[in-house]
Image (cartoon, rainbow, N blue to C red):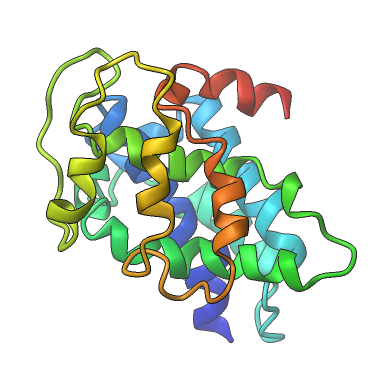
Length: 212
């Protein structure tokens, strides 16, 4: 239960979110991203607001206190050598386990509405933007190693920086069982989340984080 708490809610999803947006925004250290008020607020909302209400509580560790430590001590530590580029490795293999459990728990809950998930879909959108291998200044960068790059990159191959009308292209990815293999029988809900995946969403993310 401790490992599931970390991997699915309190640590790894926050790392992945920062990794994707860190690559797009030109960061080379995860710790530096925590100095950005908007990125910090993004991972706070992913952890506290979206993940914590459905977290697996191991009993021996308090999930909220663990997130407190992750966001206030571990990730901001400048002596931790983590880079967005390293953590972005194999992201296609991480999305389902790091965010899918929260999605499934919302679906299974009688008092939770999946439409209230705003920042997890933003991470999916950020990853789609990331696959273009063009940062937020329009400069090319090298994608981190991932076994599915040859499968997913062609989906965004015809999209140009600044395009905002290509959302239908992403259905191939959100229905790809190699990416979302651990989210059984929830394709329709993943497609609902994909509606947030505007290719220009990186330009809008500060508005979304501030106003949701």
